[in-house]
Length: 391
Image (cartoon, rainbow, N blue to C red):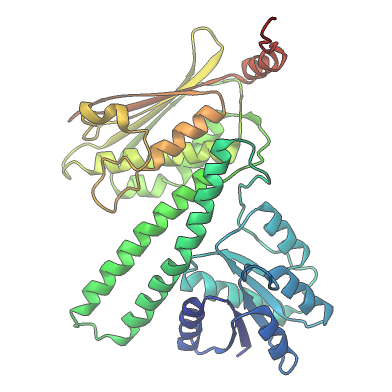
């Protein structure tokens, strides 16, 4: 079994990870900062090193620590766990041949999978050629307006919340291992885990909103994105006896968009529609329909997604795109899904609307300009003369 060096300046998180790994039969040594870790490495070799990235102002950060390890020719597999990750960090990690980069809060399963991957790399002894898979992060480099500043603040808040949340999730896991199956406290621990999962969902949604993506728009087939998004829900729909009807028009022109972000829109709509039809009794014929077509003017493409669920109260229909507004039961929704959808649709010059009737169902309709129209509008906007006051 490989020895592991764990480096993090948060004592609680350090304690949680250490105990989780020891319970898995692993040998773990801890360090509260990079300098302490380097001193330990001067006395003992560690095949696997797990490190945080940020260690406070004026001290060595994770990347400088990793560079020192590389300079010493220590053939250690490196795993990064961080609450703040962006494109630059991912690129640096790739260039330094990091085994894995994981976002906080890090679940035990992810951490163990990363350690297994590091062990496999050690066994194969292919430190420089092994391809490393990284999660993609949608981050720009410099905020340019007030909204970007707000997003930057939100990202920082998420990072700070993640620290104690990671501790809560980890200690709940450890406490669960110490309690008998019949103990009443086990039910309370289960509720702690459920609430922590719910908080994690909120944080991830805020992260999605606050991501400052330096995205390159490309020509995208809306039907292709729908098919790709549907594949993630196909099993769930069948398992819940939901009839899914696709009425996709042939030979639609492309739109200008970012494929990953556009897929987020469909994933949110499919998830909401599934929850809506499942909210009715089991004997109800549950149905979700999606349709694509071109507008009569042929300047835009639209899609409509309709469900025959419980519908939305007319009193709150005008508020459903506001952040943290949700019609779902407690802990079922974060109230950020439709807010994110609206922001993404607006990014690609689209429009979004909703029609709903309680007890009957809901239809969301979204229209995007075709690629040529989008480019035309952008050129006109770029060449429009700015107003200059006379006198």
